Picture 1 (cartoon, rainbow, N blue to C red):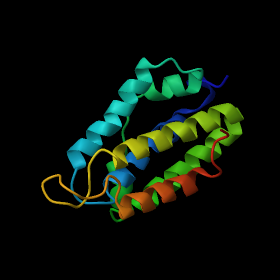
Picture 2 (picture 1 turned 135 degrees about the vertical axis):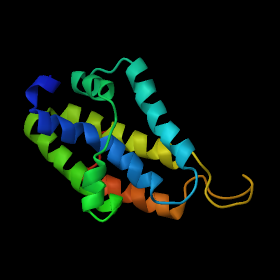
Picture 3 (picture 1 turned 120 degrees about the horizontal axis):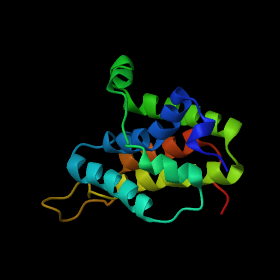
Amino acid sequence: MTSKADFNAEEWGTVVEGAPYAGMRVIGAERGGTLRESLALGRVYQEARGAHVDSELLDELVKSPPSIDPDRVREAGGNIAAVASERLREAIGILEAKATPEEIDAYKRFVMTVAQAVAGAHKEGGFLGIGGKQVSDAENRALDEISTALGSPPAA
């Protein structure tokens, strides 16, 4: 099993940043609902900490506080989509070199769980909560980008 000790500090930081960047990519896809969506991101981490996971890597990942580097986003001209895709590809590359296929699949599922929870946290459109879509077209595009950056889907 792969653990945090198998990574240097920079590699671990990249792996840890993957899920928060995915969440921020979805949050930035559509105006409105930022608070609910941010809370949903935190809730996924909290639930993952409480659940028993068979992956030491994922256990250590969810214990690390979710954060992103605001300077990196500023350097990219505020383009969170580009930064999120780049960081996710880097994280997968690191994991492919060090983790088992099962751990990589668990990581991909966790990142997508975070992104989907954020996307579904706030209805987009409508008026005063009536009508609208649970997940907007822009959020669906963001989810597609995240999925593409993660590479082939996890085994079922």
